[in-house]
Image (cartoon, rainbow, N blue to C red; front, side):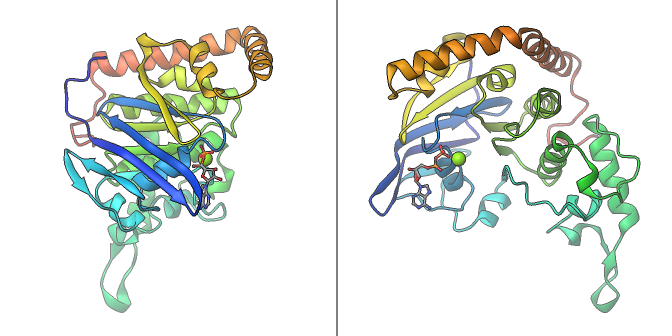
Length: 302
Ligand SMILES: Nc1ncnc2c1ncn2[C@@H]1O[C@H](COP(=O)(O)OP(=O)(O)O)[C@@H](O)[C@H]1O
Ligand SMILES: [Mg+2]
């Protein structure tokens, strides 16, 4: 793996106990800029616990977090966010009946507030313009940013949540199962955007159960199993089948081989879809890298 730059964020020997439950045990992981680091593992593997520590929700029982090489302690999600670690959870924390623009600026209304004190009010014209522009940049054409978020497709909604995090200065983007509830077409909308975030030099931690999705955009794969890491692998060091085998590690062999067969069948059935999806994402990525993404170093358009 070519990883000559220093990591954006690093966790060292993280452990977390909940009472007698050991959710994480001695896990280390490094995330580099311009990299999509996929975090894979079965249910209960410890993925959410790991990212909740990284995003300031939980304090680790042992181990430490380093940001740009400096140890940091997060006391709250706000702490992590202020340091540029943004997490988009599957349930999104968006209000479907509120407008796209209001959702975009939720919790950051001060950015688009005009006037002071009793006269303070939201500058909705500006909020709408910014939301529309930011979404247009990622290929989502919102004619009316005043329309309710609930009118967007699932993939578009995920993209709004990610665009919001990026706009407000995320350097490390943590995505917890962003494509799991989506169909192939909607998932590819999100995958394409993940590829763009990577081209903009963010560090992305992409949690997923779906090896195809991981494979389409991931550079690096860390597999967790029962709270322990089974290792970190570059794309050239492992295959999709090996990743799946590892994810299922510890289960009965028969159960596993059944799943592998199912995987092969599904793969054959979806071969065209998957191949097209991977090709499209790869092509987007190549374009962005080859011709420059049009974004300056801080991720904003000049
Ligand atoms: N708040 C909690 N209290 C007690 N046990 C927990 C808590 N959060 C997670 N766990 C346990 O820790 C283990 C890892 O869970 P989790 O990190 O959610 O796994 P994953 O996201 O990979 O499915 C599981 O055994 C889970 O039951
Ligand atoms: Mg989870």
